[in-house]
Image 1: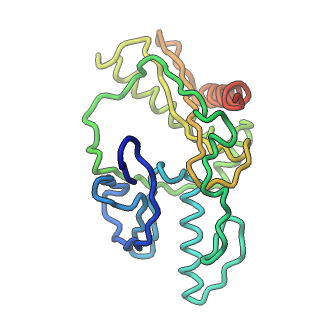
Image 2: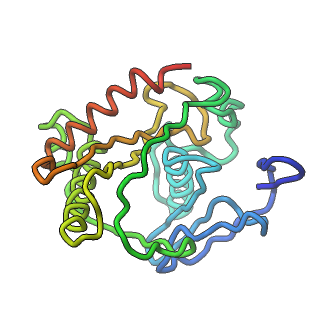
Image 3: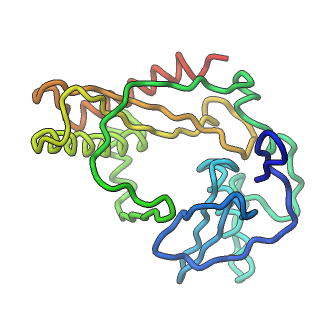
Length: 248
């Protein structure tokens, strides 16, 4: 990432990034002024991890990169890997549209409009230093999660977001009872969503949109249960998909 005069821009390089050990703190700060790569590969034991800045790509692009690198690694170990559109092979011709900006291709040159709302509730406490991010890992049955989401006629992302949002509500209620928060603050959750399903594109650059469902609790009985929050998120995203992100 360079800033020659007025604005930052990406410049190609032939330098090769070095594989690093995977420390306790992941997703560490990238010092743009030290010509650091905007992505990292880390290993620890049998784990291979990739960290990538949203300046380069989003979760979809990061998954493509990780799958492609792991496929090469397995092949070098003599393990056969089936062809997949999610796996890019070294030496393949790069399609020009992979470098294009999906926002300017699908939307206006400015991209989707930014949303500005009232200041929302933030749990009190000391923020984690921006150089030290924690990683929480949980093991769960994907089939069971999908089944629970299917019963509610929502996606897995909406289902999991609903549980997380409910937990935020519980923290808010506890802080009100302890005198650390006041009634009437919006509760808001930001959910990044891959736009490629609604707007097909070959871009590997960041092409996600942030949905921001919210609700306000003014009295104790305004609190919502998990299923109510899940449906609120689903309806909010459904509305915004058809009334906001599709507009040019």
